[in-house]
Length: 299
Image (cartoon, rainbow, N blue to C red):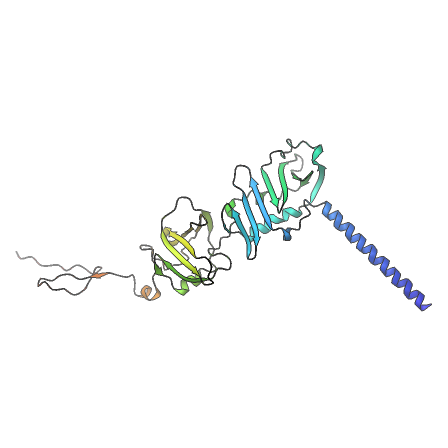
């Protein structure tokens, strides 16, 4: 009797487990049907964003974070990507077959925004007039979603760039500015430096050449430093990192050289020269910054 009751209870538990699994699966399928794409945002590896009349933005997930491949080869801003990627899981309000809608009237025939998440293309059209919901075509379906993702889709390309001066994982070894060495303390300060803004390089091709070698044997970095040390430009990236104050305060505004600490304590360097005396010999060294000697003229 007891064994029979135990078998009945065990059987009921199996039935409950099967029903629960079926309900979970049905819920997941229903959830997938109300999402814009089946892609989990955390698993997307590549993004291509094309806006009308603008160069494409191409980003790829890398070991040390996201990187921009086009239009600038530079580290990307992971925080900005975390704002964009949830579009893959956006909730749909309605879904219609693309064959039954007027693609031209909905702005989907020549969309102003096209987004590829891995190999899946999303075409963003206009908005419906009542609630301002956005039309998005994915494959042969047209979805209607909340229009909350537009700011990320229209963000300037510079917003997708990391403002860190040094690339992720870069460890500075030795450095110099116009051939004059930088101290280890100066280089250490650059590791966590972030720019106020990142801008296209433009035609700024002059400045003091600052080089930093990688301590790990990687590729060296080279910057053109201008604007009293507040603009650091990389020719290989075609980008300028702009600061309110120089990352290395010791860069002298007049010479562009980084002054070692011992020279900072005694003031700016001053040059000296030898002057001939009246006897044809050499007079003592004179400081150029000292007052020039005067000779009293006879009446």
